[in-house]
Length: 256
Ligand SMILES: O=P(O)(O)OC[C@@H](O)[C@@H](O)c1c[nH]c2ccccc12
Image 1: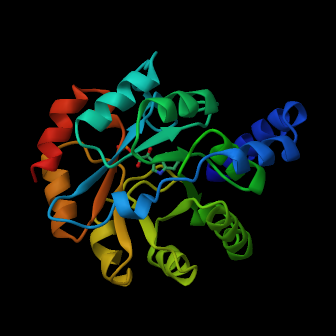
Image 2: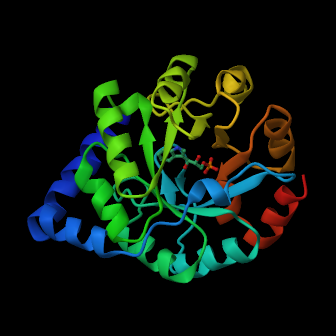
């Protein structure tokens, strides 16, 4: 499944590239004002940080919410105390788009993450051109060499990579990169199975000073408490926010 998602994302990027060539998008990316420093916004503190996700659907959970106005939802996230907004831009299964990201960027002043299956530089340039401050890099999707290349490219653009792992080995690869922001996804993107204990098992492998993000299946306050106790600095939450009153849900999470 992960390979299919990545191939789909790369095909879609290829079609966009016919219309907006690399050099055009590169010029746009470089003309942007500097990216926000996501590490500053997500820096560990007394309270857990929340990265709130704009997510319409997913291959594992189907349709979640229509979200006709992603910018309005993102503004609620910011008002509710989120430290960053994640925007799914994958079109085929998650029903997102780069236009969603651009709209969100205009509406908020906290960092914005492009949530996509990234496999080449062009997608990172697109992210910066659309105003993203962070991009997701999924360890399981990429050979280490490619991961290193894309990681360095992201930093060159002044952006922050969120490096996502789903096993002890993948966490080790994320640490090897020198990543300052590591996400542990409870969902295996190859099988869609959930492992809620994974974060607790691998958290100690992540060195002090690196921001630890617990991703996926945070549905209620209990999940936030469990992850906080296991050492999470932040949680990345989609479904629970798009299917509820986001301000109230955020308040309950930030209260932990
Ligand atoms: O909706 P949830 O279960 O709160 O999950 C959010 C986020 O972790 C999830 O969307 C996600 C984590 N890693 C990804 C990689 C690609 C696509 C999506 C994801």
